[in-house]
View 1 (cartoon, helix red, strand yellow):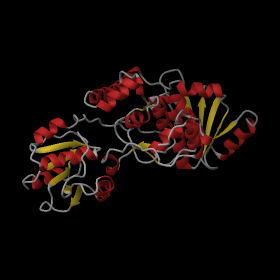
View 2 (spheres, helix red, strand yellow):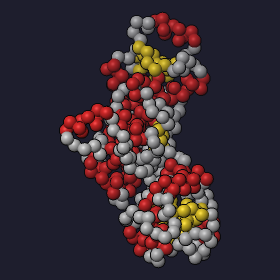
View 3 (tube, helix red, strand yellow):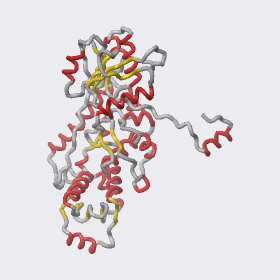
View 4 (cartoon, helix red, strand yellow):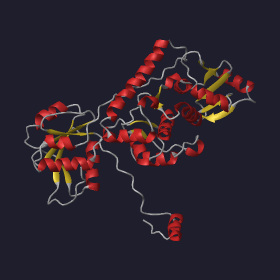
Amino acid sequence: MAIPTSGTEQAVKVATYGLDNRSKKMLALTFDKCYRGLIELVDSDDAADALLIDLDCEDADALLKNHLHAKKPVIVMSIRHASIEDTVYIRKPVNIPVLLEAVRELILGVSSEEINKKLPSPLKPIAAKSVKIGTKPQAKKPASNIKATAKNIKTTANALNERVEDNTLAALVMKRSGVSNFAGLYYKQNDYALGCLLRAAELARSQSACVKLICWNKYFIVFNPVRNEEILTNLSDGLIRSLGVVRTTGEELCIESNVMTAEEFSALLKDNAGSMKLFSAQAFIWKLTLLTARGRVPEGIDLMQPVFLQHWPNMTRLEPVPHGLRIAALWSVQPRSLLSMFAVLGIPFDHILNLYSAANAIGLAGQANRKPDALIDPDEPKEHHHRGLFSSLLHKLSGRKAK
């Protein structure tokens, strides 16, 4: 669908219903910034050329009932597909040019049925599963539990695979990255030492006490929440790598945990003074997550829904991720889906998934649950019009004109 141009005599006026104040303000700012003079938000049906109703709000049914008889064109939007007679459906996050063109065609008398045929096919929804972090040490799990875990991941992946059929972006990602099925992009965090460590960290913070994890009977990891959060361990680098990939389900690895008293912590420091390594908790958890994730994300993360990054990770003190600065630079501007980041950057998908998994483990990233985050489809990043001195000199020497 073509992007509209500013050739109309007056702005198209749209009344919105079901949006919270933040979402409505974001929509108004987007219209004003990108399409000033083309589209304008108004407060009543009488002043509007078309109505826009958010079906994800609590009183969506009542809004539809009240406004479908207003004799004005109606556009409905939601994450889940909705097929309502005499309305145009636009999925969220909303592509603003598509929305504007749909409004203009409605006003020109094109039927909602014809417009719906032109719009991108709707996506089938997928519900993300939450992974609860308990406080019990890992033990051997019965085979039935292991099968259930594999079934959950397969179900999540199958739902995504169904959505790919109707989504050109996801299909493009699969083609570029060589992924034929989404099942291989997920792991169950609690099936690895990483899950035990995150539970230990939560317990240590809640009780303001050190928590000790014992691995392979003689190696330990101690999470100390007191001094800016640090980790003490006698694991070598090779054993830390093994700890990242070995599962705690079954007999491969059994990890025991216990809360330490002040006396026990002092004794541990004294007895292991020459063999211990000290890490910041963030650096250790980040590193262990990269070893565990290996191009995957925790089960339940929807690759097509926006994820947030609270702030830039301190890359100078963390294990490097290839293209990490480029990913963070794009991601920090606003929440984006993992698939859209891949489509924009064109770098290996596993680097994006690794960075998300690591940032999520240290509490910097997660699924964006605010309504405005899923309302508008992010713009493509634009190259800044100022060039650096070195770049300008290179273009001068090569005889090319700077763009």
